[in-house]
Length: 412
Image 1: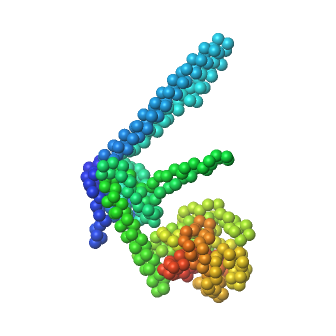
Image 2: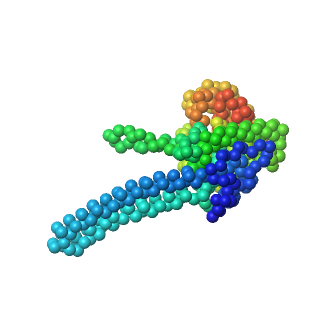
């Protein structure tokens, strides 16, 4: 386990600003085993010893309360045991002893795992820890364990939560869990907790660093999308892939390949079809060579995505069938454009574009008031592809990126 002296700054030091001019700090030794290939650390800060001590004291206070409850439980069990033995031992000593033993096994052992849990939590709170911002994600490592890892686009609302003089937590999203009420019971108050860095010095300053970092990541993502669109227009996506601005998802078992921007993520599912509504089994991270899927979901870091669904058999639908469909019109909004003769590589098909509210797709909902949705149908011989593209109605760049992705579809 690395010693605290190996951390990049003395504990309690004010957080360093994000690097300028391409200079990046050397990652703390405990971060190195958890970094992805090519990942760069842009900011890092060790946890504050006073904050960790305060957390440890709070945990031990909870443990003290639990111990008090446990002692009370043991006193109660001792009284019940004495009562059972006094009343039943003379009549049936074996049954009386078995009853007492079962009572202690069921209830008397509860304080032991509770005490072990609080002991483990207290030890975790005392471990040397370092928080970091990389060019991809937020992460916090304690000892040898990666305690927290979330991509940059998980940042929703940055808040500093002071917990003591000069230290506290910085949260970037708030989780509200509402317990499901039982029949006839009143609704309970939701449980609210934050996801973020814990036990840092100067949480307000760290929050400002996090806001700046998130803005930089968003700008970098926009710049990558612009380079991706330019490379697609120039027919140079292979060069963009070498530069890290794109990556190719090849699915030989499904018979196609597609090129995506470098920071997009993909997942797959196995759909069955019930009328016009596909029903999936659950999205899983895409892995090269995975053959048992017929639906692909590709998502931008923010506010854009597409879904490709493969169906067996040649394309039987026509452009006017989709254009005039009452169900699809209701789901997709007002008609914007039709492309009755669309050619992508060796495939032919059509496309229909609509503007409407974000009705979403299985696995993809943008949460925007107005969404541009383009439906592309392509005949690939033994099977056909149905591609759904979603982007904000006013996000012209995202729409161009989606069109460039579709144009990159090709046999694999």
